[in-house]
Length: 431
Ligand code: ADP
Ligand code: MG
Picture 1 (tube, protein in one colour):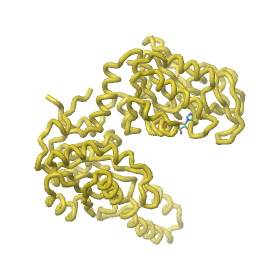
Picture 2 (picture 1 turned 120 degrees about the vertical axis):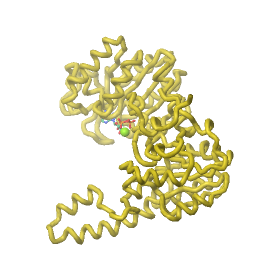
Picture 3 (picture 1 turned 135 degrees about the vertical axis):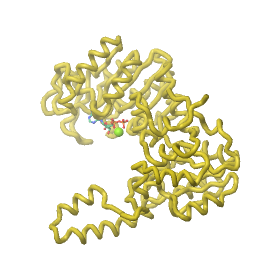
Picture 4 (picture 1 turned 180 degrees about the horizontal axis):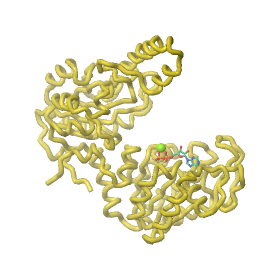
């Protein structure tokens, strides 16, 4: 597992420090609708500023066009639309899309983040109008100890996601130290998440440090019994996670849409439930592996099923071996909720990824709610991974009763799969 140097293991006073943050915040009409990610970045930023570093913050936001690049290109969707047009209309349509792309400069600008950050810190945050251009260079060079500069959206350069070495080198040239604190993009090998570490001494910030400590300890050295709860939409999204956790846990609880592939694999009819027919053999293999490893493997015994995939669909409760044709499983039933809750009593460590049903809809949220409650009551070290799972736990009001809600959706899944995360692997190891 990772044992990486952090900001506390390196002398930062008077140094220009490039900090990769996750400021990919939700925006509506130019206003930030959720500041959680900015708040999450504060401990590292405060520490560095208080210790006299000259901070150069960077982040991506959304998926803008590569407008800081000489050749602005259409994105995939636009390209397809243009290609569908009669030949004599294509050039004009492409030109129109490119003209519109210029609006990304404001639409995906990090300027609102600089303002919010300044407000939260109670100190000024300078904003550069580019990433590696003259404005960024001049403002970075002019920083005094403790001052903060935010660069523009790194994805205004297509070289960012390509991890272009020249771009990474240029970005690195702004600073003397690299700090990665963006767990949400740590599973991507991009220029600002990993590439710059080729040119600078690189350490982690407090956010990444916390993520790898809590999730790493749970995987390496769990307080037992160790229970994993997996749900969500599809088995195919979670094969790696199931496989890796089967090596480690005492009990594996399966709910959500993915449960129906397992039920079908056991010979049950599953109606119109989400079921991946090409994953039935795999489901059987995973169940065999659980048996071989002595892992208790729990599937729903009853379900709330609906007529259609619709919020106000007629619904009823039914045992897992009796799902009628034309109905779909949308949540775990009350007997299953009790069974899962009883299993969680006395757990030492719980890792949970994937809602137990379509928890966005009130009629199908009771499974996720009851499991959240049971996890909270269990007193176990509780770790929530996955974007939708984190959102569900928050919406249902259990966020502050969990030990840790990972800040990275895709990154937390890859971590639980046991994969190496490029944005962490590139950092210096502790001696
Ligand atoms: P995470 O983002 O936490 O990894 P997933 O993306 O795998 O979780 O799954 C979340 C989605 O799964 C939610 O949108 C939820 O509505 C859906 N889901 C859960 N149970 C079912 C079900 N029985 N049928 C259809 N969709 C489901
Ligand atoms: Mg998801």
